Amino acid sequence: MKFSISKEAFLDALQQVQHVVSNRATLPILSNVLIEAADGKLKLTTTDLDVGVSGSVEANIEKEGTTTLPVKRLVSIIRELPASEVEVSVDGKNHASIKCGPSFFKIIGLGEDEFPPLPKFEDSTEFKIAQSVLHDAIKKTSYAISTDETRYVLNGIYVSFREGKMTFVATDGRRLAMVENELEYPASNETDIIVPSKAVGELQRMLGGEGDALVRLSGNQISFEIGDSIIVSKLIEGNYPNYKQVIPGERKERITINREEFLNTVRRISLLTSESSNSVKLTFSKGSIDVQANSKDIGEAKEPIVADYDGDEFAIAFNPEFLMAPLKNLGEESVYLDLIDGMSPGVIRIDSSFLYVIMPMRVSA
Image (cartoon, rainbow, N blue to C red):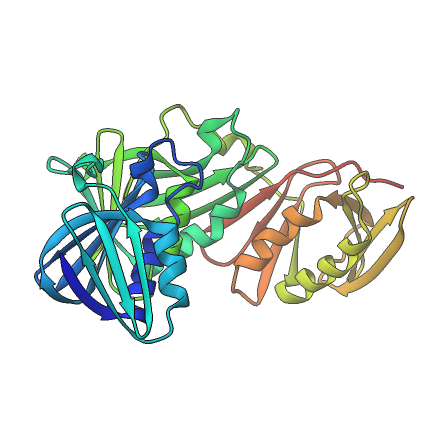
């Protein structure tokens, strides 16, 4: 096997697939990237047995062949090479020689026979989704995925294909983000799945602005085909909780707030929160919201922002990180804050089909 390729193109292609590989791989082969050189292209594949990623890049192939090489070390070498053209040749023992300008490296790989193949999707259910829609839905929900491994069904995004809609939901039990989009598909394709957070992260990295992503489902596996790249993942098995129960069905107050101003104020005030008092208090009075933090060990901070509120004065407190998360990931100029009282969940909404439920914290005096 022998090929030459530009340093930048090789590095980009390797970086696109390397994130799947764990630093503590259970098998040596899982630390490697499968490299297949044929038809003027290199096809690169990595897997951790749960998630697999494959992509391709054009190269000048002198001799076709296949091998596997340690991907993290290979990325480190290619990144540091002094010139733009890289020559790679691999012998029958999977020893790869890398030449670039005056530099020479030799790294030892493993045979491709040991590399676990990515699953095939022959009898699959298919959905075609615009990349921009998919990227937007992930951006608006993925930050609310739970990292608590004891509640494994919450360690991903719940995706429901029902009644001509595609609904994304993520929750960690203290907040919930939801986005709904219209999508055309046959009624026979209706299903609910949970996509694990690792696959969501890979997908977010790979999605571009234009064109469609082809989503295939087969058994407990999902694949996302984006151009020449493919992400394959196991789905999380289990019953997702009934998220609709936590969405308040009513609201007493709706306050329209400038998103960026609200975000910046909360960010500043949160500098005076501490582990023991990790909340910001919002006090509503006519025409304004006072955002404040009070920590016995550190001090206090307070800043008013203008708001279209004209009801009775009341206060509610939220975790500042949870409050800022949707504000950072939305692009709209204004958001709506829907409230019932100081003890009930708050809901952040925008004009399109998005909502974010956030549980209140105990208001300190």
